[in-house]
Length: 319
Image 1 (cartoon, rainbow, N blue to C red):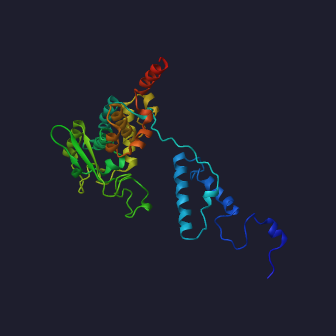
Image 2: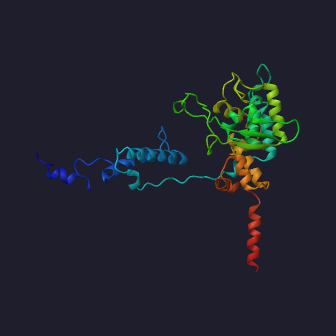
Image 3: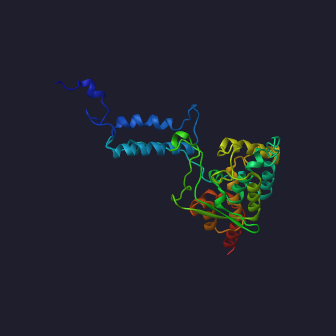
């Protein structure tokens, strides 16, 4: 059988031999670049966020590594491609952090959201305790949604305690084993059987006791549920939160990043603890962070450091 003609040999990519399995040659590298470029786009063709691009690239990398493990590819072609990932912002923007007075005003405003309902209680009042957990205990939204009565120690006086052993983050139903958008999972960045104990101040103890007395709990013990008894969807509580912002904040503040998302209440809690002088390891334990991640993420939210550092530098310069 005759071999390839001169034209075929001349047009063949350098280093590629007939019958060679795809995966490591320059041709593969050229074909891998367009998919990487597509990672930077959303489905509507617009630019994706930096964190989204990094996450997609990591998934693609793992898929190709699995192909190498199955011997479908001789090597991971991404290792040979120079493709610059966008820089991500890991630190919390101090502009989103509310102070204690603003936080209290937002919680009060929640009780007025949807108050026209028949029972006069409204959607906001039903969820106020959930938002209070994000602020006073630094719970993630998925952890607050998953909170059960048996997880709470709520004495009549003094400090209480929350003992978390799971979360219900909202994901696409196609990616869960049960087909439920709020599949119960373990705590973030923790082992399957790990728990997190969080002391809670009397203010939050009172709020949760009142919530249980007024609304009761779900059959499985969940404190916070929809009007039909289901798990509270992120779209539902986000809508309630935006209404509360318009009631509690000035028009200028509403247009600003201040407490734009419910998650910003957690940021406010951690920032308050750090600025209050609580040791970083204790803050990390209560918030469910590693100490290194905690200090890196909240570096810009720690007030009062600039004056101290400036004074130390001035003292050295005058020696």
